[in-house]
Image (cartoon, rainbow, N blue to C red; front, side, top):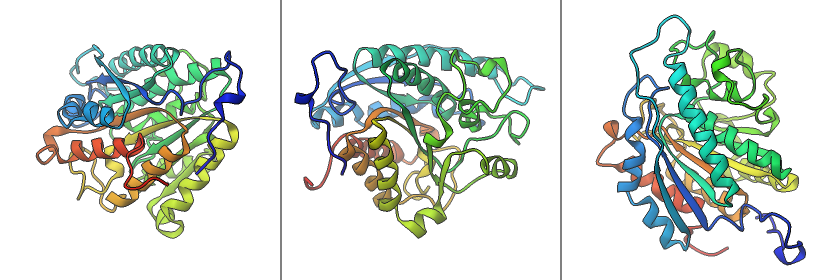
Length: 324
């Protein structure tokens, strides 16, 4: 894939690339489902630990430190009338994660967030965006998901905030509770890539037209191939010298292989396609931070989805059948 940076040609004062610090991984549990409509994702971090995530990564030669779980507010009773369930609690969780991510990245470690529902990506991406801004590196987001998560409080049919993080990060939501302390858009929309999309609400469809984001639904993946699309995305990040943040929602996978999620949609990415995505990212050396979200052990089958997620994370951090 893309050529790695030659570290011998840089002065000692320059910051290391994401690839050079990838062997120092910090696991951060975010045990909340406050932004979701179905309870259970709060148990996701522990399910990933039980499935052997840390051990798997250490066997690949990485230095792994588990920083434990963040402590945040519990799920309150539903708050009616504002179009967003539990928005105040969502905001608190995201601010806590923002600060932890910023701290970990500043310590030259790769943050690996164990969720938790997908609303927490607002916190992780804001935290890493602050870090990237100080480093003078453009931030790119690879959003693996069945949904575009581009709803606003006015358009959302459910009021669940885990369907709004991309809209919030792009500055499409005018609500002070979504203000996480940085200017919006947090990420330039043209640097956001949505992959595996197959469920989009009507208002979201209209909003996506002029969003500037790159949206790869399952038809585009079928027509153009995973290899071609991922190659183009990674080439753009490499050319820009960018930091790649991967946000992986379990529901981007087909539910036949990953049933442990509260928002299953048929026709998702296959086992082999998913591994190809992860292997290509690993080979590029561009990965700088990661979210693993929406794993719901209460809906899983004997931790099947958690074990698959651990397997995919291994591919993301260098596990491969053969050296290429």
